[in-house]
Amino acid sequence: MTDPTMALRALLEKSSDTDLLREIVGFTAQRLMELEAESLTGAPYGKRSEERVNQRNGFRDRTWETRAGTIELRVPKLRHSSYFPAFLEPRRMAEKALTAVIQEAYVQGVSTRSVDDLVQSFGMSGISKSQVSRLCGEIDDKINSFLNRPLEGDWPYLWLDATYLKVREAGRIVSVAVNTDGRREVLGMAIGASEAETFWTEFLRSLTRRGLRGVKLVVSDAHEGLKAAITKVLHATWQRCRVHMMRNLLAHAGRQGRGVVAAFVGTAFAQEDAATARAQWRQVADQLRPKAAKLATMMDEMETDVLAYMGFPKEHRAKLHSTNPIERLNGEIKRRTDVVGIFPNEAAIRRLVGAILLEQNDEWAVQRGRYMTLETMAGLSDDPIIKLPAVAA
Image 1 (cartoon, rainbow, N blue to C red):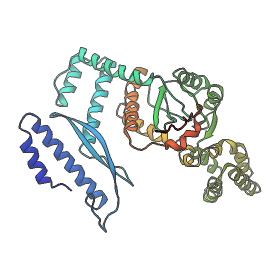
Image 2 (image 1 turned 180 degrees about the vertical axis):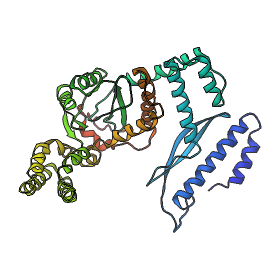
Image 3 (image 1 turned 45 degrees about the vertical axis):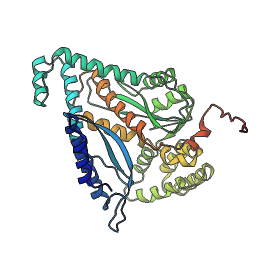
């Protein structure tokens, strides 16, 4: 590993202009991250150690906006857990909270003087009403461009879910998908007063108008309006979220019987193919029928929807049986919007939540590894793969 003393000396000799401060801040931040990663792994980078408890897994590039200027950082990644430098998170949250507060203040008609005092309390120069308006306009343009962008290629897997915020007018709907390149993207969001079939139908149609095609499997909870919209618009196979299903099933198993029922049902999910999974599912239902007829009937009704993912490539099944991919995104949205409280209108929701979705989409885009490998996605595209004949040199 490079000697930090030599690296700092070389840096000082190389830089003698106004960039020196920025370079020193960047060097110090990088060394802090290396030390934090070393403490989490239990060993220095590239060295063997009996005390090692984790491994390094490359880097992710991040830009850090400071008063010394923009600094490019390489944040270490860990194989068995996540790591984010402690000195970045507070500033990122503060900047985003400041932006959100400015936006909300503008939307709610707070006086320019109040907004100006708020901005100055964060150590920034004052801001006029026209500047606040321009800031909101710039953010809205970026978010609208992102949420209305054309969707190209095939999207075999689509996750849909809803979450509810404290809003005077409505809730919010988002969708996440994996395209045939194996990468995740946020496709869109919409705001509505309820999860009625009409709302979901219009939302899905808006996605198809933007180019959504090739959907093979849609993963969601068992909301009747959503199920009807999926059938009407996408004509795709529907996968009922296994996590939500188990909660509903175990609610009727009784406190003492939940562990046994969960273990029995889990044996169907452990099968290698769809046929044996369905056979095992029916066998478990028949075993439960004499003492738990209601549970057996529920299993009969949900068999097709819960095991739909078994008909897709084995390599994908661990990510297809539930709405976990989008649940984590919804959790981040709730965490970041709780500071706002009650949104005044739909524009405020779209601005803040849209910014969070755009940020998440950008993070997925720069990840080195695909969510699903390109080789396993190849057979899911509606477009035939054309192979050119070999040409002799």
